[in-house]
Amino acid sequence: MGQQLRLAWRSIWRQGRRTAITVFVITFGLFLIILLTTLEEGVIRSVIDSGARLQAGHVTIEHEDYRLAPSVSLSVPNANKLADKFAELPQVRSAKLIVSGEGVARSGAGAFGILIAGVVPNLERKTSPLAENIVEGEYLDENDEKRVVIGTVLAERLKLKPGKKLVIATNDTDGELVERLYRVKGIFRTGTDEVDGALIHMQLDAARDLFNLPEGSATQIGLVMENLDRLASFLPLVEESLGADSKLAVHPWQTIMPGVAGYVTVERTSYMIMEGFLIAMVSFTILNTLLMSVTERKKEFATILALGGRGRDLRMQVFFEAGLIALLGILIGGLLGGYVAYHYSVVGIDLATFVPGGEVEISGIAVDSTIYPMFTARLMGLICGAILAVTLLLALIPVSRVTRISIANLLR
Image (cartoon, rainbow, N blue to C red; front, top):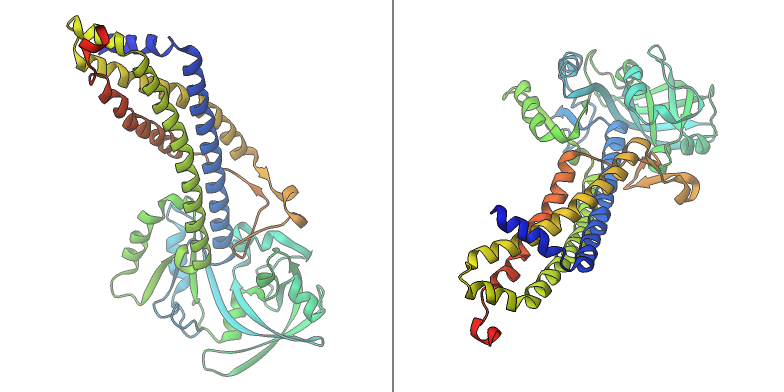
C-alpha cells in the first residue's frame, strides 16, 4: 500500500497544472460551503435564541391543556419550586416564571388589545432582548408592582410617555372583569410591530394580582439553555423529573414558535441544496481529472499489466490519486474557510449596513444585526467528510476502467 501511495503522489504531479486547477476548485468550493453553512447556521441560531429569550425559553413547561386553549386558569402550581429545581441543572442558563394573559390597554387616546406578560425583572434583564432595548425610561425593578413597560408602537397609539398612566382591563381566573391603573416606566423597541404594538411587561406578583392567581403559580416556566445542541437529550430529563402523573407538559421551542421552526426548515433545506450543487461541482471536477488521467495513461497501464503487474495495485493507485487530490483541496480549503469562519464567529458580521433602517427582522423575530457564524469542529468535520466521501465514491468510476483495457491492441 505504501508503494501505491508514493506512486499516486508522483502521478498527480505529472500534470501539475491540471492538478493545481483541480485543487483550486476543491479549495474554492469548500471555502464557499464553509462560509455559507456557518453563516446560515449562525443566523438560524440567532433567530431561535432571540425568539426563545423574548418568549418563555428554549423549553417551556405548562399545563397539559394550555396549548389547546391558553387561559390564565390553566396555571402551573408551585411554579416557584419547579423553577428553582430546574435552575440548578447545568444545561440551564436561567429558569423563568411567566404569567401570560390577554387584555385591553386604555388611555385618553384610545384602547387597544394587548398581551400581558408578568415576569421576574432580574431574570429578564439577563436574558430578554426586550430589556436590552429600552429607548425611553427604564426597565422594571423587583418592587415595581404598579408600573409597566410597553412598546414604541403601543406608546404612540396611546400617546404615552414614561410616567404617564394607563388602565389595563382583563378577566381574572374567575371570569370577573378587572381593571388596574399603572404607570409607564419604560418604552422598548424590538423592531417588530407585532411585539412593539401589543406586548406589555409587568412585575410577576403584579400579574398574579391582576389575574387573581395563587402565590407561587405561573402560566409557564421557561428554561433558557446554555447549549441548544443538547436539547434532544435534555427534554427526557425534564419530563422524567416532572413524573408520569403530572398534568404538566414539556414543549421545545419548535412547538412554542412554529413560525420560527418553519423558517429554520426552509432555510436549512435551501442552503443544503446550494451545498449539494457545490459538492457536485467539486466532485465532478475531480472525476473529470481522473478520467482524463486514466485515458492518457492507457498504454502505461497496459505495459505494466503485460509485465505482470497486478490490476489491483493499479486500481489502488488511481483510487489513492483521487484521495490525495481531494485531501489537498480539503486541507487548504478547510484551513482558509475555517479561519475566516472562526474569525467572524468571534467579531461578528454587522448586517445593519445592508438592511434599510439597520434593523433585522426574520420570521417576525427581531434579531441582533450582528450575526456570529456558528463555527464548530463537528460542523467542519461533517462538511469536509461529505466532500471526501462523495469524491471517493465517484473515484470508483475511473478506478473500474483501469484494467478494462485491451493490452494487445494498445501495445500493437
